[in-house]
Image (tube, one colour):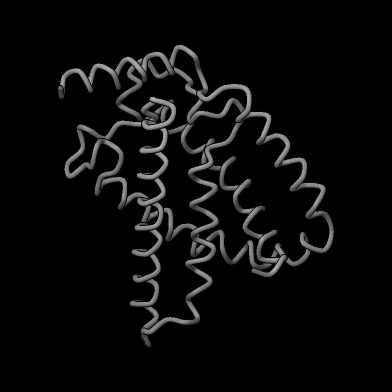
Length: 200
């Protein structure tokens, strides 16, 4: 993989992680049914403003959208539809992998879709896969064109200093604790243990 593409993916990973943190923060504060008290909740397992799930997803979307020129469809509509479906599938797969690893390694359930129709282990469900598809469309029409314009200038001026600073901040935020809130981790662990005992 060319160095320029690796830098682009790294840049998108950090930007996506921060943007995802903002999205999750607002969603959990104002829209989540799991937060009836409407408190501010630091999402994810990082202490800093990062949700790596979104960073990985944004990097994956960049690669998927970059394949548009190799489309097997002559129709622009079907080409874009295929990109949106592929992007939603990639985001759903990343979401499932992240949730499963969190349960397996940290014994923490970061989200729970158990009450949603068609859910798999409470980690993924059709409703949020459709939400991912909508975000893929937003990325395709609004973010990808802008990043394609801004990236060449950014690459020539300050790629390594900014990436180094971002990587350092990200490493520090993930090193301190495996969860954003000790009380939240405890609650998640208790819910996980309770679910295991119930199923047993």
